[in-house]
Length: 276
Image (tube, rainbow, N blue to C red; front, side):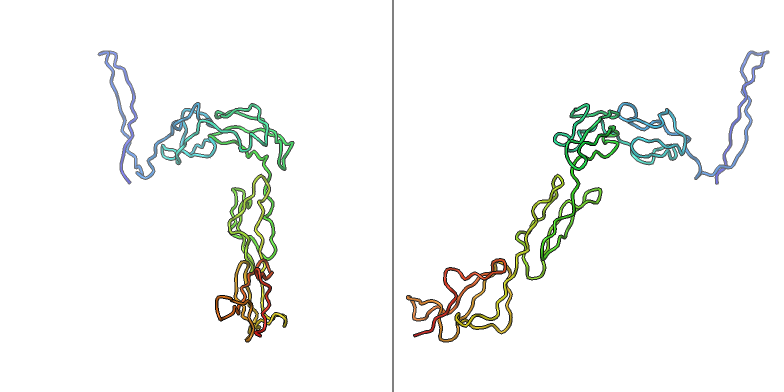
């Protein structure tokens, strides 16, 4: 607490000397320094052509609020947030292909109003009005198609989703079930209400037993191969896969490759022949 005083002055005219005498009464009061406040705010910087104020006054008392696209409060002689206004609004997104604008311009000043009609998308045929305020349109102008749920893939699911400001999923990646492999790794996006083609989860191959006519060694347990993976199979003892004219040893192995659930053996039939 600090002591202070207020002056209450009375002007009094003394006729004899034709002079002005000032009589002041001094009244002492106690003032809490923490409560001392500037009494009012002036207009925010930039008010006028670039900013529309509601209400529009030259002076605002403590606690007064104005609307200029969001709220600002007069607090101890200062506005509680920086008030900045953009000069103009650009065309709404999709104006060139999906909507009709009246008037149709590249730039709209603050306070300008447009009438719009949707030419395509889920809101085709709908109409509306919007006003440029502080560089943004007063309401969401939606003519573009909304994105449906991401496409489903067999033996997989989407992950790492990205959403727009409304929470709608617009981009996803995919993860396949165990042993399955995606046909590509990059994410897909929703464009103009339609999803790009998702990857395919390619099937694994499994090897365990072979037909007797192949004369291949059976494996001790089932062997899985992911798509694109290669493995080497062994002929039974005393058998060979291919004669090697450049060596005394014949080729006794067969290389196989997995292709979306099917075993490919290359150019040679996977049969081992008996040594004669």
